[in-house]
Amino acid sequence: MSETTAHHGETRTDVHHGMHAEDGARRGEHPGRSRNPIIKVADIAWLEFEKPDLMRAEAFARAFGFQVALRTPSEVHLRGTGSGAPCVVLRQGARSRFAGVAFRAHSEVDVLRLADRTGVPASALPESMDGLGVALTDPSGIPVRIVSGMHELPALPPQEPLPLNTGRDVRRVNLTQRPLRVPARVQRLGHVVLQSTTYLDTLNWYLDHLGMIVSDFLYFPGQRHRGPAMSFIRCDLGDTPADHHSLALALGPANRYVHSAYQVSDLDALAAGGEYLLERGYFRSWGIGRHIQGSQLFDYWRDPDGFLVEHFADGDLFDSSLEPGWAPFTASGLAQWGPPVSADFLGTSPRSARREAMSMLTALRSDNEFDVNRLIGLLKVAKS
Image (cartoon, rainbow, N blue to C red; front, side):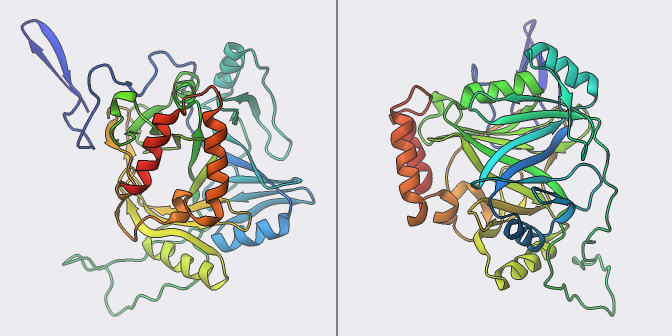
């Protein structure tokens, strides 16, 4: 929260007052929000993927902790225990690919306003969901659907957090703790992380079109003067607290999905659910630990097609008064505690190195924001 003071008749704002981060914006840096957005979205709604083997994808999803809301020969809807829309829509496809993200508008009026301003007609959503949507594309080519009026799935019984004895606060007497090794019941979709070769244009597009605001900026080591290279972006709900980020956007050599995150009840659910996944032969990419930006407890997994997904718990919630924090983008700065960040998570493992190298060469030959100096900055991230 900024503090405003008067000095010789001039009003000054101290962006470091009440900050959640050690450093705030300097004069002339990106403000992290749009002055006049078209609408302000309420939340992230769902993600869409195409998968060649829906049965294999569903088997992993159940082990990860999803419930199935709908299944047809060509489509599976995955949900959490909370009420609302499905978290993930899987469709039959020739290859495994990320097919887009949907955000929930506050009303169908907002959907129509966005459709009018963009010149893209609104249309009815599939009968399985109902409601109205407008299908846009962000500057990096990611399909983005803005939706409203869907029918709500009823809430399911949640996985309750375990009662904890902390110091003299005793909540459990004559009882033991024996968390079962079962799937961690996913509660909801928390966020998606995307990479873009046109990072700044794409960031501004989300701020201008969807009214989202930045919680934290990261910049490549030694390149703060070039501007941010990653942003954690939340929905602007005014005085109502919102997730630290529903979307995170990073500058990189390809326009692609990076990972998505799904909330579970607590650390025990996250850890025991991880043991369940390990016992079934699934691959842990990185975890367990606690992030810095967003503060979440995290555990990252690869699905059978190589897509990165995260269990998280205990994330930060900000209202609209907080200004963005600024910090260097470093591998060591991705967590407060936990194992060192893995080569798999960073994309530097042998199985991904060739693909990453080809992406870098392609990006450097193209007209975008990813130039040689940005490549040098990105390579420093993994070593810092």
